[in-house]
Image 1 (tube, rainbow, N blue to C red):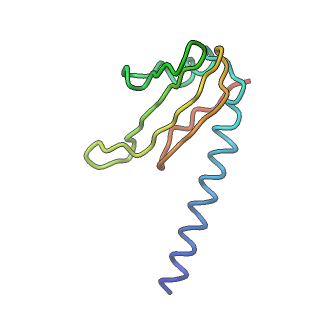
Image 2 (image 1 turned 180 degrees about the vertical axis):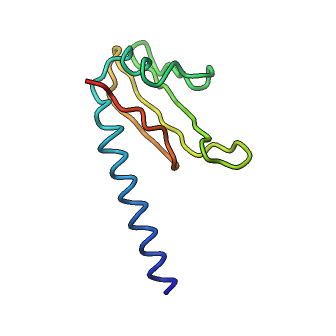
Length: 102
């Protein structure tokens, strides 16, 4: 019985993660920096706004929604090159669901 519960939880987690990537993250590819900051805001600290080189910056957003004691539950990062989103990465769960409006 425990084995089935573990399999069910892993399957559910994978499906939620795949849905988040497809529905929330993928549409941000090729968005402008202005579109991104209009929906997500400007990164809150200097550490969350990292200039890689002259043309590339990484914006990081951290969320502690649903956490106990304010621990970070989700980290979402976007790579911006020449003011266009060219990549993303996310870790954790209960991430913000800021959809791109086209």
